[in-house]
Length: 480
Image (tube, rainbow, N blue to C red):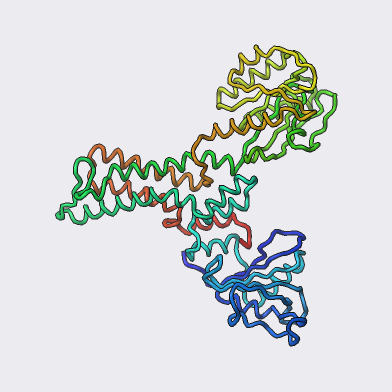
């Protein structure tokens, strides 16, 4: 994809009022465009002369004014950072102007920058240029989105690691093995008379190449990243945790306790919660959405019945379920009906269930034998939504269950597009292994190896077309 040589500009900070807002200008004419709209402050430079950025030191801040070149009207007091390429994010000359953070100063500063010759940047165009200019590979460029969208400290840590090249590093053994194999197989096909044969163990003369070993190395590296994608998805997209139970057992009180805030209305009246309430928490580094559901009960009330149906629907999307009981009372037939419902859900999709015996601040009653017969894998936790006792145990149990469900592999924060490409790469490696095992000719073996290498290149950026790049970077915000 050719690089558009225009100088681009955009507001790089979120909409709305703030302390500081930033205008980013990048491209071959960044210095000249900035000079057209920037004047050094008269208190520091009595003549108010324009600043010659080309002659000034790179990576320095300058204090001054943004002015409209047409009217000479003063727009804002600013700090201007001049950064000479290639030591910039895009590897092009770049200017960043820190304005006061109101919408109007930013819009007016951008307006005069565009009037001075810049073009409005497209979404993600600064990062696209960083990729096209070799500042980032494609895996690192996509990690920028993960950093921006991180919802917990742990998901941020993983995203920053990929931004630093961790994903590309983990794919390097597969890439290196496939490149080496393809070079050998192509040479063997092009020069059949040069005795570049492989012995029955898979080794080239001199031990320089082993097809079976190379394919095994590629398979191992690809499989490890794919296995880690389940945990990566957990940290990137989070988990949905449904709080279910009969009316008035303390589901809304438990929601408030877990949030450490009064989000749901709590009353002694059964059926207070009529709809599913969703709130997010940081569950030991996992971004989680808590679903406070209406009490599941047979009812003739039309509105309450709708709430119960929505509660049942929430169970189908939940990654984990907290079955809330009133621990101060014996289990009732309604509890058993819910337990049967959860048992069917858990058996169908292996969803972890935690039984929360609420109201531990009151005298405990009840035998859970019948419930546990239906939910033998469930973990029972005594807690009090009123005092907070046992909340830490519940949070730890849920976090452990979610991590166990995602597997023990090192998390890989890969997107759906990256996962699809790596799945194809691994499938081609398996095809090559099967072909090698039955003695398929080397030129046909090379076809599978080449396809696997191409698929890996779709992740790191060596093999990606313009349409894919447009789809990736169109998801970025303007100014990034």
